[in-house]
Image (cartoon, rainbow, N blue to C red; front, side, top):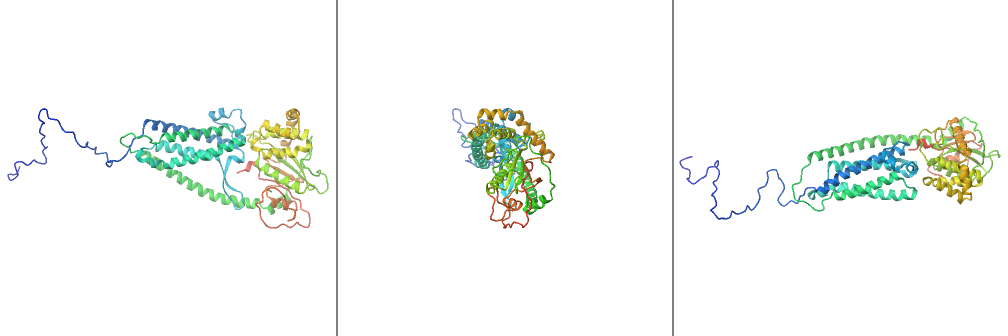
Length: 491
């Protein structure tokens, strides 16, 4: 110590002496508790740590989202024609034919945009969108976790996503009830409702004072996952836009009416043997051997959406020109009764074909109307509905049941499928006009050109998204015929 330093000064390196309190004197309490050096919260900040209920709800939400994603994955496989599914979905859909019937119908896809020709740009299955939805929710709750009171606003994205998913789920559930119940789809909607309830339980309704954790690793993983998802989406969007442009150009060329007629005129003529029994004309009109009549043979499937559209167009032509066409409807169902089909895609197609054959045998003049009835209600085809529609057309229910179960009825369907295979058919619809097969005639203008119909003889029914140019009937009759993109090439 320096000599000139004051005697009462306390060195900086020495601790300040604390005088002991006198006996019986109360020690005053500290005004403020000392703050930990690691606690960087500003004074008065309102933070809370997740409660036990929030943590339990969080991991239950992860499990529910995982089950939803798993179920959606198998529903996507069913849409693509798979028959083997996970045990949970197999138990739910056991013995029910409505799942595959609804999942392979046009109601199971969302149309995202249109091409310049009016065709769907992208047909995304709702189950595929559900797979992405459940996966995103699962990653959020697994990596980010429940909200705390101080950061509740950070939960806005997941809450908006869940609200949107719940709204879509309600709309699709109501649509499903009107079309036919799919238990697998109903299971997904129930899981989504449970997921929304668990998400509400993770919200900080009653805060517990404490120190908020800093899950930097979880945030980094979540950010990396979202960045990867954005990059993958960008690459996918670029690839999709390129392939979509090529697809649009290809469809524009292949579905061009002049090109279709050009291919038809050069197609070989094949001999289509008549049916062994019940060779009945399917539409009200002339017989196939009448002069000037165009004879059409269609190999169809009652659960094929393209077949339905084709039948609508042919029906319109038949009504507008009753003396022009003779229609012979035959069967190529993508179901177990067709030996050429390895993996059935339309589980009610054989039932519908047998029901149609029964009506054609018992009431031939109502067969065309009955076929139209089935096509108009594709998603509602069940054994009871098929019988009910037949009875409404004046067919006896007992006679219908007996005719539909006859071995000869199933034999006719298999004979049709065998004939189609010999003609090179691999998927419905396949159309032969005057012994020649035509590919891709799916529009009104194409039919007008192939059948030599002038501008004043427009065909009723069917899509009209083709070229708007006028058509002049050529001087000489040119053979032509219709066909559709097959159900196997359905996007």
